[in-house]
Length: 107
Image (cartoon, rainbow, N blue to C red):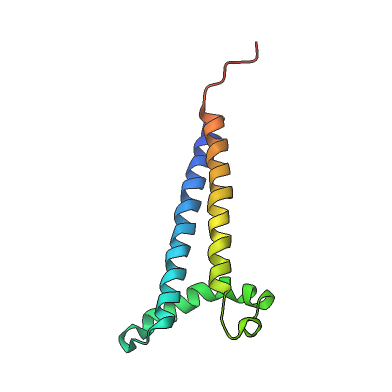
């Protein structure tokens, strides 16, 4: 069970880093959507391609025209990612700690 515990701990850490990276990429996209800097056009295209697969399904359920043209899909994506970080990653890390902690035994 020790190997499985280390595997779960590593998986939890990798998921935590990946979700945090998603938050930063999404945040940079939101900030760059507010400003128009011609020299950052390629960065905007890359960020658009990275984040659009996450944001487009959310826009199907919450279209921007319902909120007067305000696109709240990044806010919903932030909330989903934060939920996954707080629930999924912490649950995996807790279970890994339980597996790696020596038990008192059965007898």
